[in-house]
Image 1: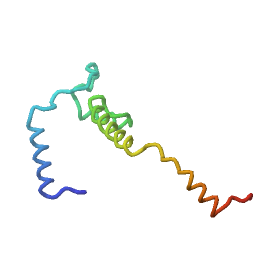
Image 2: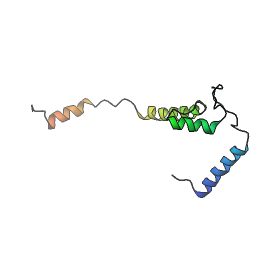
Image 3: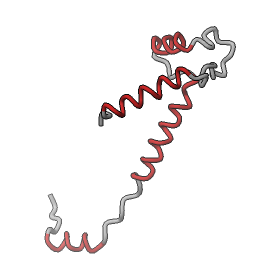
Length: 100
């Protein structure tokens, strides 16, 4: 569902506050010997060009999403209930199997 105009403005304000702050200004990638270390814009461009997985510094975001999806699926997927024997008895009584 699309945000309302007010919610959209709130999101933009939050984005601008993050950009203005010192939060997330240093490269968090553990591969400090990479020539693109600290150059996030070009790092993401290279990953997109080659169709690689997300850069290491952003993998935690993907990990959180996958964990959330996995948790949701675990709640929804389970063993099917066993069909009660009386259902089969009823089936056999009203619709006996005939050799085909």
